Length: 280
Image 1: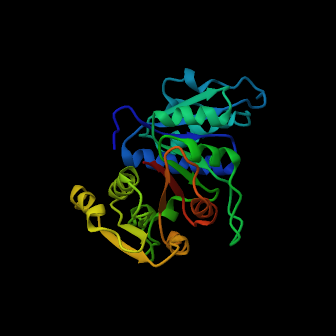
Image 2: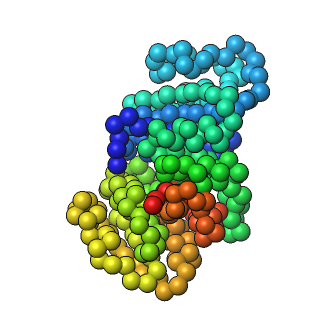
Image 3: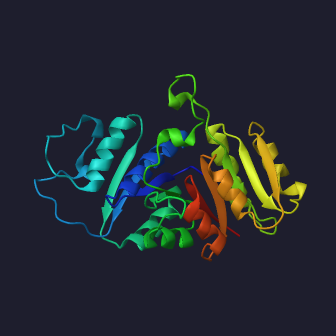
Protein backbone atom coordinates (compact mmCIF):
# COMPACT_ATOMS: atom_id res chain seq x y z
CA UNK A 1 0.00 0.00 0.00
CA UNK A 2 1.23 3.49 -0.77
CA UNK A 3 2.70 5.42 2.14
CA UNK A 4 4.26 8.35 0.24
CA UNK A 5 2.31 11.23 1.80
CA UNK A 6 -0.21 9.37 3.90
CA UNK A 7 -1.11 9.53 7.55
CA UNK A 8 -3.10 7.58 10.08
CA UNK A 9 -5.98 9.98 10.75
CA UNK A 10 -8.36 9.82 13.71
CA UNK A 11 -11.48 11.82 14.43
CA UNK A 12 -11.55 13.45 17.88
CA UNK A 13 -14.81 14.61 19.48
CA UNK A 14 -13.94 14.36 23.17
CA UNK A 15 -15.86 11.13 23.76
CA UNK A 16 -14.22 8.21 25.53
CA UNK A 17 -14.47 6.08 22.40
CA UNK A 18 -12.74 8.73 20.27
CA UNK A 19 -9.88 9.03 22.76
CA UNK A 20 -9.43 5.25 22.86
CA UNK A 21 -9.58 5.28 19.06
CA UNK A 22 -6.83 7.91 19.05
CA UNK A 23 -4.62 5.68 21.19
CA UNK A 24 -5.25 2.77 18.80
CA UNK A 25 -4.45 5.06 15.86
CA UNK A 26 -1.19 6.15 17.52
CA UNK A 27 -0.10 2.54 17.85
CA UNK A 28 -1.05 1.90 14.23
CA UNK A 29 0.93 4.96 13.10
CA UNK A 30 3.98 3.68 14.97
CA UNK A 31 3.63 0.24 13.41
CA UNK A 32 3.41 1.73 9.93
CA UNK A 33 5.95 4.51 10.59
CA UNK A 34 3.49 7.19 9.53
CA UNK A 35 2.46 10.52 11.03
CA UNK A 36 -0.63 10.62 13.21
CA UNK A 37 -3.22 13.24 12.33
CA UNK A 38 -5.83 14.24 14.91
CA UNK A 39 -8.88 15.95 13.45
CA UNK A 40 -11.66 17.75 15.30
CA UNK A 41 -14.51 18.62 12.96
CA UNK A 42 -17.52 20.86 13.52
CA UNK A 43 -18.02 23.32 16.34
CA UNK A 44 -17.31 22.85 20.05
CA UNK A 45 -18.20 24.80 23.19
CA UNK A 46 -16.02 27.76 24.06
CA UNK A 47 -13.11 26.83 26.30
CA UNK A 48 -12.21 29.23 29.14
CA UNK A 49 -8.76 30.04 30.40
CA UNK A 50 -6.73 31.17 27.40
CA UNK A 51 -6.11 27.74 25.90
CA UNK A 52 -3.12 27.54 23.59
CA UNK A 53 -3.50 26.58 19.93
CA UNK A 54 -1.75 23.30 19.24
CA UNK A 55 -0.88 24.46 15.70
CA UNK A 56 1.39 27.17 17.16
CA UNK A 57 3.56 24.75 19.15
CA UNK A 58 6.84 23.71 17.54
CA UNK A 59 7.70 20.86 19.91
CA UNK A 60 4.75 19.29 21.65
CA UNK A 61 7.07 17.33 23.96
CA UNK A 62 8.18 20.56 25.67
CA UNK A 63 4.71 21.76 26.69
CA UNK A 64 4.40 22.77 30.36
CA UNK A 65 0.78 22.02 31.27
CA UNK A 66 -0.51 24.18 34.17
CA UNK A 67 -2.71 22.17 36.52
CA UNK A 68 -6.43 22.80 36.43
CA UNK A 69 -6.62 24.60 33.08
CA UNK A 70 -9.55 23.54 30.93
CA UNK A 71 -8.57 22.46 27.41
CA UNK A 72 -10.32 21.43 24.26
CA UNK A 73 -10.45 17.70 23.64
CA UNK A 74 -8.12 17.97 20.66
CA UNK A 75 -5.36 19.73 22.61
CA UNK A 76 -5.62 17.32 25.50
CA UNK A 77 -5.50 14.28 23.22
CA UNK A 78 -2.44 15.62 21.38
CA UNK A 79 -0.56 16.22 24.64
CA UNK A 80 -1.43 12.86 26.15
CA UNK A 81 -0.47 10.99 23.00
CA UNK A 82 2.82 12.88 22.69
CA UNK A 83 3.80 11.71 26.17
CA UNK A 84 2.67 8.13 25.52
CA UNK A 85 4.35 7.99 22.08
CA UNK A 86 7.28 10.46 22.17
CA UNK A 87 8.74 9.37 18.82
CA UNK A 88 5.49 9.85 16.94
CA UNK A 89 4.94 12.78 14.57
CA UNK A 90 1.57 14.20 15.68
CA UNK A 91 -0.43 16.71 13.64
CA UNK A 92 -3.51 18.26 15.26
CA UNK A 93 -6.05 20.22 13.24
CA UNK A 94 -9.48 21.77 13.71
CA UNK A 95 -12.08 22.51 11.07
CA UNK A 96 -15.54 24.02 11.28
CA UNK A 97 -16.71 21.73 8.48
CA UNK A 98 -19.34 19.25 9.70
CA UNK A 99 -17.96 15.91 10.82
CA UNK A 100 -18.94 13.58 7.98
CA UNK A 101 -17.72 15.70 5.03
CA UNK A 102 -14.58 16.73 6.95
CA UNK A 103 -13.67 13.14 7.76
CA UNK A 104 -14.41 11.97 4.23
CA UNK A 105 -12.09 14.66 2.88
CA UNK A 106 -9.39 13.70 5.39
CA UNK A 107 -9.69 10.04 4.42
CA UNK A 108 -8.51 10.85 0.90
CA UNK A 109 -5.04 11.63 2.28
CA UNK A 110 -5.02 8.90 4.92
CA UNK A 111 -3.62 5.41 4.84
CA UNK A 112 -6.35 4.55 7.34
CA UNK A 113 -9.07 6.61 8.99
CA UNK A 114 -9.84 5.66 12.61
CA UNK A 115 -13.07 6.48 14.43
CA UNK A 116 -14.53 5.72 17.82
CA UNK A 117 -17.74 3.75 17.71
CA UNK A 118 -18.98 4.04 21.29
CA UNK A 119 -18.66 1.56 24.11
CA UNK A 120 -19.28 -1.99 25.15
CA UNK A 121 -22.83 -2.86 26.16
CA UNK A 122 -22.77 -6.63 26.46
CA UNK A 123 -23.87 -9.47 24.21
CA UNK A 124 -26.63 -7.47 22.55
CA UNK A 125 -24.00 -5.35 20.82
CA UNK A 126 -23.49 -1.61 21.01
CA UNK A 127 -24.82 1.46 19.23
CA UNK A 128 -22.71 2.76 16.37
CA UNK A 129 -22.93 6.52 15.83
CA UNK A 130 -24.32 8.02 12.65
CA UNK A 131 -21.00 9.74 11.94
CA UNK A 132 -19.03 6.49 12.17
CA UNK A 133 -21.46 4.61 9.95
CA UNK A 134 -21.79 7.49 7.51
CA UNK A 135 -18.04 7.77 7.05
CA UNK A 136 -17.45 4.01 6.90
CA UNK A 137 -20.11 3.77 4.19
CA UNK A 138 -18.59 6.43 1.94
CA UNK A 139 -14.85 6.80 2.58
CA UNK A 140 -12.40 6.07 -0.22
CA UNK A 141 -9.92 4.53 2.21
CA UNK A 142 -10.11 1.88 4.96
CA UNK A 143 -11.99 2.99 8.08
CA UNK A 144 -11.26 1.31 11.42
CA UNK A 145 -13.97 1.51 14.09
CA UNK A 146 -12.71 1.24 17.68
CA UNK A 147 -14.93 0.91 20.74
CA UNK A 148 -14.45 2.63 24.06
CA UNK A 149 -12.46 0.50 26.45
CA UNK A 150 -10.10 -0.90 23.82
CA UNK A 151 -6.67 -1.37 25.45
CA UNK A 152 -3.20 -1.97 23.95
CA UNK A 153 -3.08 -5.46 25.45
CA UNK A 154 -6.38 -6.37 23.79
CA UNK A 155 -4.62 -6.75 20.44
CA UNK A 156 -1.95 -9.10 21.79
CA UNK A 157 -1.82 -12.68 23.03
CA UNK A 158 -2.48 -12.76 26.79
CA UNK A 159 0.69 -13.11 28.87
CA UNK A 160 0.92 -15.84 31.49
CA UNK A 161 4.53 -15.61 32.63
CA UNK A 162 4.57 -12.08 34.03
CA UNK A 163 6.32 -10.57 31.00
CA UNK A 164 5.20 -7.10 29.80
CA UNK A 165 2.05 -7.24 27.63
CA UNK A 166 3.76 -5.03 25.04
CA UNK A 167 6.23 -7.83 24.26
CA UNK A 168 3.55 -10.45 23.56
CA UNK A 169 2.81 -11.50 19.96
CA UNK A 170 -0.10 -9.89 18.19
CA UNK A 171 -3.40 -11.71 17.91
CA UNK A 172 -4.46 -12.77 14.40
CA UNK A 173 -5.92 -10.45 11.83
CA UNK A 174 -9.20 -11.97 10.61
CA UNK A 175 -10.39 -11.34 7.05
CA UNK A 176 -13.95 -11.98 5.95
CA UNK A 177 -13.80 -12.66 2.22
CA UNK A 178 -16.51 -13.10 -0.39
CA UNK A 179 -15.11 -15.37 -3.15
CA UNK A 180 -17.36 -13.68 -5.72
CA UNK A 181 -15.89 -10.23 -5.12
CA UNK A 182 -12.94 -8.70 -6.94
CA UNK A 183 -11.28 -7.57 -3.75
CA UNK A 184 -7.58 -6.95 -4.22
CA UNK A 185 -7.73 -3.78 -2.10
CA UNK A 186 -9.42 -5.71 0.70
CA UNK A 187 -7.04 -8.66 0.58
CA UNK A 188 -4.01 -6.39 0.27
CA UNK A 189 -5.04 -4.38 3.32
CA UNK A 190 -5.48 -7.53 5.40
CA UNK A 191 -2.12 -9.01 4.37
CA UNK A 192 -0.32 -5.70 4.90
CA UNK A 193 -1.91 -5.22 8.32
CA UNK A 194 -0.92 -8.72 9.41
CA UNK A 195 2.62 -8.18 8.10
CA UNK A 196 3.26 -4.97 10.03
CA UNK A 197 2.21 -6.79 13.20
CA UNK A 198 4.05 -10.04 12.37
CA UNK A 199 0.65 -11.58 13.08
CA UNK A 200 -1.04 -14.56 11.44
CA UNK A 201 -3.85 -13.91 8.97
CA UNK A 202 -7.03 -15.97 9.26
CA UNK A 203 -9.23 -15.88 6.15
CA UNK A 204 -12.88 -16.83 6.63
CA UNK A 205 -14.86 -17.43 3.44
CA UNK A 206 -17.96 -19.31 2.32
CA UNK A 207 -17.69 -22.35 0.09
CA UNK A 208 -14.45 -23.02 -1.76
CA UNK A 209 -11.99 -20.21 -2.44
CA UNK A 210 -10.06 -20.52 -5.72
CA UNK A 211 -6.37 -21.07 -5.03
CA UNK A 212 -5.55 -18.18 -7.36
CA UNK A 213 -7.26 -15.70 -5.04
CA UNK A 214 -4.64 -15.75 -2.27
CA UNK A 215 -1.65 -17.20 -4.12
CA UNK A 216 -0.11 -13.88 -5.29
CA UNK A 217 -0.54 -12.40 -1.81
CA UNK A 218 1.12 -15.38 -0.17
CA UNK A 219 4.10 -14.84 -2.48
CA UNK A 220 4.16 -11.10 -1.76
CA UNK A 221 4.07 -11.68 2.02
CA UNK A 222 6.02 -14.92 2.51
CA UNK A 223 6.56 -14.23 6.21
CA UNK A 224 2.83 -14.11 6.99
CA UNK A 225 1.20 -17.31 8.22
CA UNK A 226 -2.16 -17.73 6.48
CA UNK A 227 -4.94 -20.02 7.66
CA UNK A 228 -8.13 -20.50 5.68
CA UNK A 229 -11.46 -21.32 7.27
CA UNK A 230 -14.20 -22.45 4.90
CA UNK A 231 -17.77 -21.94 6.07
CA UNK A 232 -20.83 -23.58 4.54
CA UNK A 233 -23.43 -20.85 4.50
CA UNK A 234 -23.40 -17.52 6.31
CA UNK A 235 -19.86 -16.68 7.53
CA UNK A 236 -21.13 -14.03 9.96
CA UNK A 237 -21.32 -16.22 13.07
CA UNK A 238 -17.87 -17.64 12.39
CA UNK A 239 -16.43 -14.14 11.98
CA UNK A 240 -18.02 -13.00 15.22
CA UNK A 241 -16.58 -16.03 16.99
CA UNK A 242 -13.15 -15.36 15.48
CA UNK A 243 -13.29 -11.69 16.53
CA UNK A 244 -13.13 -12.77 20.19
CA UNK A 245 -9.60 -14.02 19.54
CA UNK A 246 -8.48 -11.40 16.99
CA UNK A 247 -6.63 -8.12 17.07
CA UNK A 248 -8.54 -6.76 14.07
CA UNK A 249 -11.46 -7.91 11.93
CA UNK A 250 -11.28 -6.84 8.28
CA UNK A 251 -14.44 -6.74 6.15
CA UNK A 252 -15.14 -5.23 2.76
CA UNK A 253 -17.79 -3.16 1.07
CA UNK A 254 -18.30 -2.46 -2.60
CA UNK A 255 -17.02 0.97 -3.57
CA UNK A 256 -19.89 3.41 -3.84
CA UNK A 257 -22.19 1.26 -1.70
CA UNK A 258 -23.10 1.17 1.96
CA UNK A 259 -21.90 -1.75 4.05
CA UNK A 260 -24.46 -4.53 3.82
CA UNK A 261 -26.52 -5.85 6.69
CA UNK A 262 -23.93 -8.54 7.45
CA UNK A 263 -21.09 -5.99 7.70
CA UNK A 264 -23.20 -3.72 9.90
CA UNK A 265 -23.92 -6.62 12.23
CA UNK A 266 -20.20 -7.38 12.48
CA UNK A 267 -19.43 -3.73 13.22
CA UNK A 268 -22.01 -3.74 15.99
CA UNK A 269 -21.18 -7.07 17.62
CA UNK A 270 -17.49 -7.82 16.98
CA UNK A 271 -15.23 -8.11 20.04
CA UNK A 272 -12.30 -6.31 18.39
CA UNK A 273 -11.79 -3.23 16.18
CA UNK A 274 -13.32 -3.58 12.72
CA UNK A 275 -11.73 -2.30 9.50
CA UNK A 276 -14.16 -1.56 6.66
CA UNK A 277 -12.28 -1.56 3.36
CA UNK A 278 -13.79 -0.35 0.05
CA UNK A 279 -13.06 -2.47 -2.99
CA UNK A 280 -14.19 -2.92 -6.60
